[in-house]
Amino acid sequence: GRILVIDDDKAILQACRSILEDAGYEVEVASDGRESLERLRQKLYDLALVDLKMPGMSGIELARAALLNRPDLPILFVTGFADTVGFDEAASATVLQKPFRSDDLAAKMAQVLAQSAGQTGVSPRPALPQGGPTERSPEVR
Image (tube, rainbow, N blue to C red; front, top):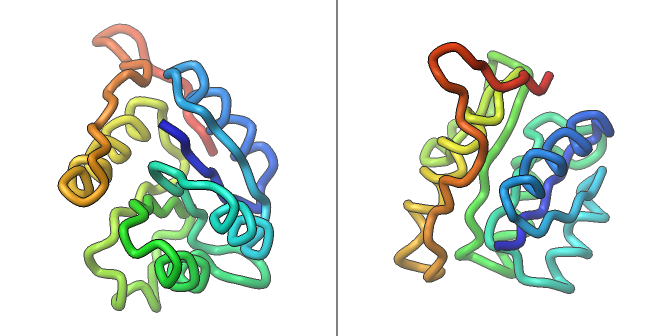
């Protein structure tokens, strides 16, 4: 599957790209709303991983704009903020809190893809590295 990762933090972009590519996904990254909307117009993605708080265009604003052109796009929001004020309108959205481990990302992505599988035909891919009882996956902060 093809994933678009949108975050203004370059370290998060690189960490997510590495985790997802290792799991066999095709990954593209964008560092702001304008760039991500242009990519979304050019290609079809199986999922967008969107930072909730970004300068300029917030993740919510980006999602609204993206869903106008592609209403079936599965979106997973990520945030380092515990407070999701203004997020009430997207109450059905799935949110992953930073810092997260690769297995947290795998679980949330599978949840979002499973919810949208009936609309897009995309099946969840639980291939991200899983932390075992004595092994924890590294955190993405």
